[in-house]
Image (cartoon, rainbow, N blue to C red; front, side):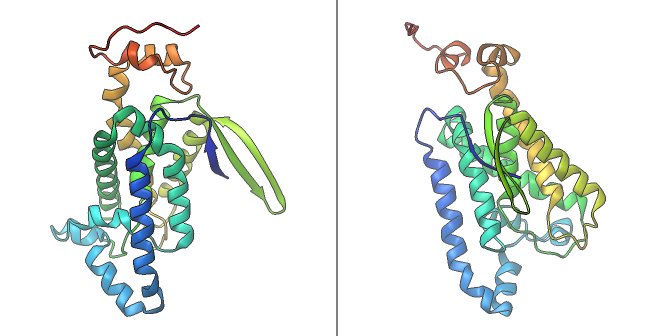
Length: 248
C-alpha cells in the first residue's frame, strides 16, 4: 500500500519541493556508479552517511544533515521522492519557501537523532530522506487530516486504487513504523524505523505553531480538515491582511 496522489492542490509553485527532489536525484546519479565499486561506496558512506555510534561519541555530526540526501538504491529514492512530491507542496504553500526549508532540515536532523537515541552503538550507516519526509507527513496530518489521498493496494495480482482520508493513511503508516521499531532488531534491521517514527512526531510538533496561528481547531472547523479553502489564510493567518470580498 502506498500513496499515488492527494486531492489537495497547492496555491503556489513549490520551488523548494522541486529543488529538494532535483538535489536528491542529482546526488543519487552521482553516487550510482559507486554501486559497482563497494570499496569506494563504503568510503563515500564513511564520510557522509549517519553513523549512530560516531554521533553518540561526539563525532561526525555532519552525517545528521548530509545523510538526508543519500539513498541506498533506485527504489529507495523513488519511494521517498514520491512521498515528498505528494505531501511537500502543501506544507511549503502554508509555511513559505524558506520556512519549509528550515522545517525540512530540522525534521530530518531530529529524525536522525531519534535513530541515534534508539541505537546509540550501531555502526550501520543510515541514509535516506525518509526521516525528513516523515516530518512532512506529520505536519500534513495536523493541517489536513481529512484531505483525500489515493492509495494503491497491491495483493499479488490484485491492483486497486482507494481514496482514503489523510488521517487514516498517515496514521496507519505511523503506527506501522512504531510497531516495526518496537518489534525489530535494530542492529540487523535494514530500515530506520525510529528515524521514520521520530521524524513524523517531530514534524507534527514543529507544525503546531503554524496550526495555532491558523486558528487551531477553528482552522479545522473552517476547512473541515480538508484542503485549505483559499479564504482560510485570510481568516486565520493572524496578520494584517486587507479584507477581501468573498466569491459567491
